[in-house]
Amino acid sequence: MTTISAVKFNGVTAIAGDGQVTMGEKVISKKTAKKIRRIYNDQVVIGFAGGVADAVTLEERLEGKLEAFSGNLKRAAVELAKDWRKDPTLQKLEALLIAFDKNDLLLISGGGEVLEPDENVVAIGSGGNFAQAAAVAMIRHADGMSAEDIAKESVEIASEIDVYTNQDIKTDKIEAGN
Image (tube, rainbow, N blue to C red; front, top):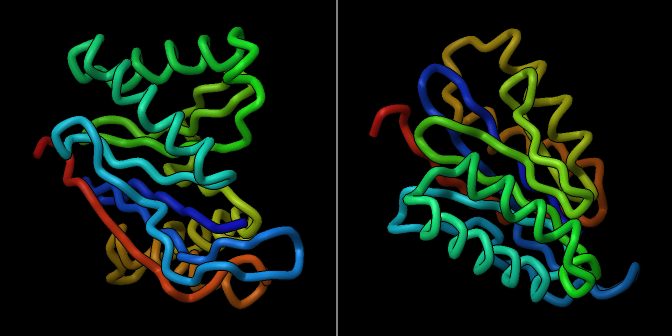
């Protein structure tokens, strides 16, 4: 379980994620996992929740789709979601991905969904709803906060509520047009 939160705000898209890996419902097996990665020549940032091996498989598939479609994230995400929905092997994967580049912020799920968030916030994992609510509130009432501050603080808030989220928070960001 985990919490990953991504925010698009003032020309910057930022992501934050905790480092907790839980085995079952009772055991924390790792506190410092990296669930945020850069792919496709560092032009796309992804964050994942769910099974680590499943997420790595999806990361590799997404990168292959990005290669096939010259870095077009929306097209690559749609093609990945189509494969994920149709391929019986991929259907067994239990993970969610957030992906963004300088233009787009997307949630990609195994049900075949590729969603662009309405409020420029998307969050996944066990603490995702807490983080998303916190990030939306911060965006609506932001006073001197950056996208990275909002994403990180939203995961911090989730970590205070969700037992499957810790405070070892990593962040990354991409500025629009860069």
